[in-house]
View 1 (cartoon, each protein chain N blue to C red):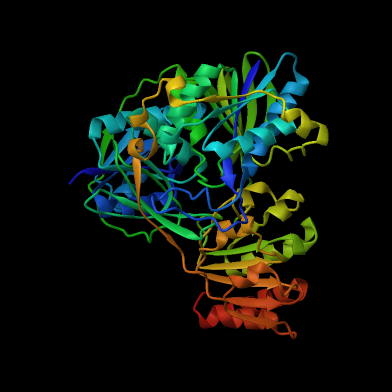
View 2 (view 1 turned 30 degrees about the vertical axis):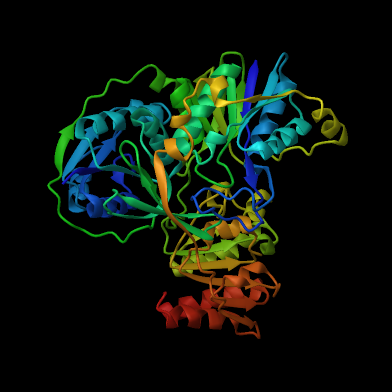
Length: 321
Length: 260
């Protein structure tokens, strides 16, 4: 069976959950191999990749991958593709993942499919399913040239643990001058909120214009914390400066698909719906009974969010204890 | 300095967007406009032109005849001229062939800086800028939340990543993409709209670019759409008016559906 390469998404060697989802999907369409680029590789990383099905773990241990933007990663991944002739390459649909995929597609003259939410085997090769037009359409595509390169959104598969050999394969790559043309400096990690990652959380509580001010996001945060969920914000709230941009849910922010999405004081403009309408369960709390968000809601509560949300928070804490 | 801004004519976001039978975006069925996310690229280019001397701003689009609408909108905001890559064989081009054609047009036009939006509002891929940097063999300085500085030799941006914010510096020539965090785009003035009518727009065919028609369009695409279906609309759930127990009802919903 042909190899399927999965680019490992990690922070300083600590492998992130979407990587395991990709290994699970890779297992459906071939034999999964992980590709670890950058500093921080360790036996722990190898083992956790093997525990999720990686037969091989390719390692390109080079600081150039983090010192320069995207291009060295694409060169390194292309080197692994050249040596392994995989049936497909899967990457996480993150900012970096998509741009690495983009450059790899050009280098290998391969069909590129972005933002897949599912990948299945077929007699035409892997079929990737993605949403389009604010998630109102579902599109299935296959790659017809080169090596199928597919970026997959987080939360697209349930992780299965399946033992792989996890054989380490070191790959030496000498990077071109071009790959080192965009220098990264002054890296400031985002302050940890202690909450789950927005893209990966199973519960998301988002606030919008109805909150009326930055200080009132405390109401949303309290509910998210009671539920163990992530906090999101509508574009209106972000544009008003009430909550930072990395938490924006919508067309120009994150697309989330959690088990539960709670929209607090969000009217549900198309820009926002594009980012959340594939959530499994949607609860909307808004004082305007004509807000379009109610068209999507499994449960809609028309009322004052400053009464309803704290009551819900209190009730959750009470029932959990 | 030659600044080339890529603009795309995309279906109106609030219209009922759809796919045609051949799996391509149905552009005939709905009105279009300059992609909202490209307006940020136009704005940044115009700010660079205002701050620098001898900066020429050219807009480049690829698309059917009506795509001139994107050029005219951008020209009404400011800038010098437009280029429209128009050819029937482009219909159905994917990322691979679109980036190929755009790269050839960019080379023919000449550039120091290419500026794009973060993604189009229809395809939403956000990959074309990286593909262009690869094809053109120039610096990729993408997803700028802010352009910190530009001079004749380099460009520096702040990139707000998922996990960290960082500074990226690249030598010119470069491909820069900008996010919606770079600042609201200006509205075209009446004078701007009138002036745009007299600004030059060139139309280039594939033959002008020396690109083989077999490499583009549905025939040349590296991907093929197997099916495109409308998702069934979400069925509206229960809507209740808060009578003092709205929070408890929400908790009941979460508990009875085993969601907490």
